[in-house]
Image: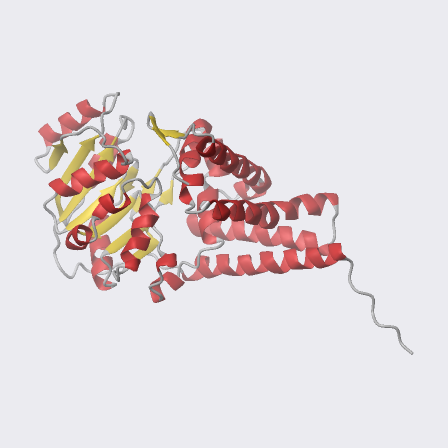
Length: 378
């Protein structure tokens, strides 16, 4: 009589589950890398008038370069409106110089920030209210448009019948910590979010946007309440994308690395404050936040720890899957390949940053950005 085979040890079963899970996430990542579309080069079918709207708070190092790139657009630009959001640096002087130099540039007078509003959301609402264009292009001051970007974005939106189009920008990275940590922005999103699927399905859960570059049809913006509908949201860009889908409108997020680039943060301190501002408030429920931390701890960090402390083919293969995720995204988005080697360090810092964001929000201290403090309502 043959004895039944002995079951696998619990540890081996868990390691196999870890490997299968990382392989699935690698599949999602490759799906995005290979099939997520960029904006296509099409002739501009319909001439559209676009208002470029730039909220600016303490942007003395960015505003001039941003405006120069916008004003060099060969087609589609009607006007450029800038809201100096009570800056304490020389941003107002830079804006005044451009207003005097080019008649298309207008300054929107700042107002006191009302209760219940985030600063950027209020600035965008004021800009939209003063705009005359049939399309509104909300652009962060650290964003840089390439030649012809506005025409390509409008043409793409019209071709795809979208009233909301976000262009995911190319990340400019200069310093060491930028190159180590900033690629995680794309890693966090494109390892779990099936970007090509969002073009085929209208589910609100598939709404995604990058706030550095949002092109929105004005009539639809006004109909749906615009930034007033997300007035207290720190993570307003994706909230707007989801709102569009909830109301039956078409919102899309495409790879816009050929149209816009952005250097979001210039130092480790800025990266910390910027990510801390968005991290915990990005989740509607605290359970989602802890689920995110569990996912990243188990799937994206533990394979490396296990491969060192308890090496076997399953843990090494799981770690290799994560390396392939990082490498494929680095090739797609032109991130430095050497940063892939430092993934365990970057992932550890990401988790610490997330906990810092959670602690500041839950303790009542709030997160700080641009000399303003925001407290989570969770």
